[in-house]
Image (cartoon, rainbow, N blue to C red):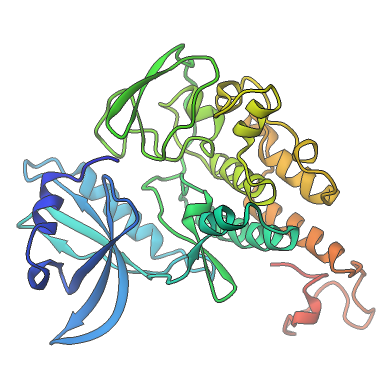
Length: 365
């Protein structure tokens, strides 16, 4: 696990009654922490608690270098434009200038993480997997329209609350054009601050905190979780995160939902090995087809997941919105509904008429 900066550590070392940033009293840590730990907080005004929140903490320097601070501000500005029922809501950006700490205060989703459900049950049903896929793909569509990429799409970052799946824990990144770079033959990866050489061969299971090249900068490191990171960034860590990378993470997550294992793990098992198959991680070998690992799955679901796991970004679906539409179509087919044209008196254009639940199988959006 990456250690928190001295600024954040000093804030968290304060007594409970003084451990706050802005109006947010920090109660307890959520998750495993790292460069930007997330804390459950109470938003207080005049001694009155207004609501609970999840506050993600960042440190910045006082030496005039405001690069990190500006990137967090850019992220907050972008999140203000992302409104979607399957995305955590952004509240505010509290700052403690004296201590050099700022935070992103967001909606606290009190529910079960998807990875916990998979761990407990082994895998999810097809219906549940489709519900997850439609929800997360719809959320990613809204994120990408706002010029952001998530960078860490995985079951641990999807929370189920009262039957609704919400995407949490954004990486700080904007969608930019990928720069072509040659893939290094060997690189150093820091797992829990322990250097590990990863060459072009099968590698053992890696943890979630991945930093490439020994960098301690969370903005320059390979942000994400190995097994869900798109092959382009694994092969050449300097490349910029893109929406297509989020789609690969979605594919890996749906593959895991319905099989109980990651594509790179399945690739190793098919050859009698264990851990993550390096050739799949960096895109030199395609992940095994979902249909080859799990039999009797709907053909539509297999086609969507396989397309999301294409090693080349240009071979994946063009947008998250298209993925959501395709998964919705599969779900409709499984429920026995047939996609029919609307009645002649209604036609394909609704004008000012409302879209009702009964229109769901014909109209999507």
